[in-house]
Image (cartoon, rainbow, N blue to C red; front, side):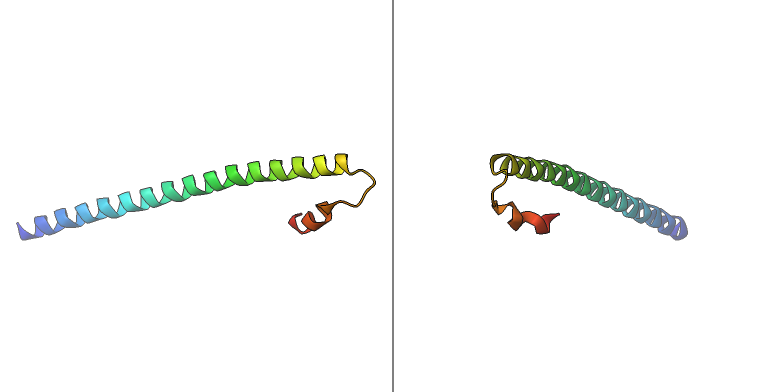
Length: 71
């Protein structure tokens, strides 16, 4: 009886460990998906800002040179 209760406790602990691993994987996946979406939108906004500044200041010095380190 003690042996079977020990196996039962180990089975419960294994299930808990598996649930923690699944939750961790889901949370990191959601985090990186949100990070990818926000970085995509930030890049689109940066590109539009750069195009607008270059369109408005064609042939002039513009402060877009300050953003060259961003890529």
